[in-house]
Amino acid sequence: MDDIRNAVLGVFAVTVLAIVASPALAADPTPAATPPMGWNSWNHFAAKIDDATVRAQADAMVASGMRDAGYRYINIDDTWEGRRDAGGVIHPNAKFPDIKALADYVHSKGLKLGIYSSPGPKTCAGYEGSQGHEVQDAQTYAAWGIDYLKYDLCSLSGPMIAAGSLEAAQAIELAAYEKMGAALRATGRPMAYSLCQYGFYQVWRWGGSVGGNSWRTTGDIEDKYPRMVAIGFGQAGLSPYAKPGNWNDPDMLEVGNGGMSGAEYRTHMSLWALLAAPLLAGNDLGHMTPETLSILTNPGVIAIDQDPAGIQGDRVKAEGPLEVWAKPLAGGARAVGLFNLSDLTANMEVAFADLGVTGPVSARDVWAAKDLGRLSGYKTMVPAHGVVLLRLSN
Ligand code: GLA
Image (cartoon, rainbow, N blue to C red):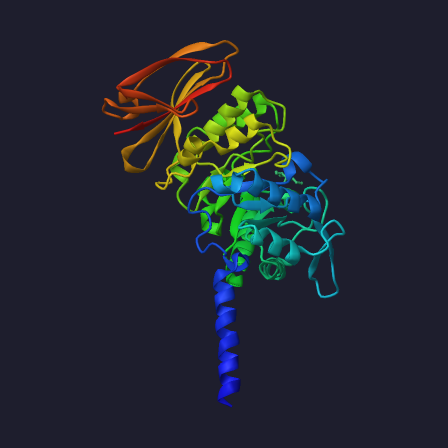
């Protein structure tokens, strides 16, 4: 009898050890304490995404050093969804034979897996949404080992328009997002909850109250400089609404997708870091130029985005196409971006007193990885469409 008991206890102990040691079960108890970092399939692959491609992206995230730079989530966007069975349980389509096995694989790499759905009957690409199946879907995601849900308004906008008034429409939307937020919490599995409703109804004012860890503040980004600029610099004024666990999301990164120059991608990355935005790479991680990788993994830039104080930066001043943005960092440090949105090289100058910094302070050029000495201000040439990003510390 004792032998049997010892054997059972032994198996139990080994199982507990395996559970504790297994990355598969290492769900983050506080998702999004800093802005989520990872990769999402949509910007590069759109509907051409499948199990093998997701595995290859996870492999590349590790091999490229992106995981070690802080990237964690591998997020499947739209077009994975199949049919519901007679019991209403959602199944993936033929592109994704076994999502639980895929999650196990991604977890075995020390990464996390994200998925996508809609509060409406259909997703934006016309696949099955979660309406009427919120609790069931949240449970399915938890059983698969999902760590992140992007929940995209899409077809819920139909009933919202039909509701007739702005208030009624907003009530429909809030209830739908709250319903999935509660369903995710009820599973007991920590999953980051990403609201995607393009910034309607000033989502930054209520996204956190429905359980959102982040909320899109705009329509879709494109791999084009004017669109990136319109979205990124349009974030001015939203800094009061971000805090650890609740982030404004100006959409995913386009770095490396080929539509912008190196200077423009450095502007994109610098601005997203100053905005404490989620950093979700949207390129093909298996085919990156050294420049793309260096932009995505610059440790100084990532440290600004991921700063533990969790304070979003904002615009300090704009003179025509020359803009200065700053982000308070832990310990009284500051990140400062000097952005030149014009088509010509420009001279830019910033007095640190304008940032509330009483100088002189230690200044570092983040992209150049160069200490500039103790300064009370800085004057520099900024390339067309480019940025000079500084870190100031006492
Ligand atoms: C919307 C979202 C995008 C992407 C697509 C997928 O447009 O904003 O980020 O998820 O749907 O269909």
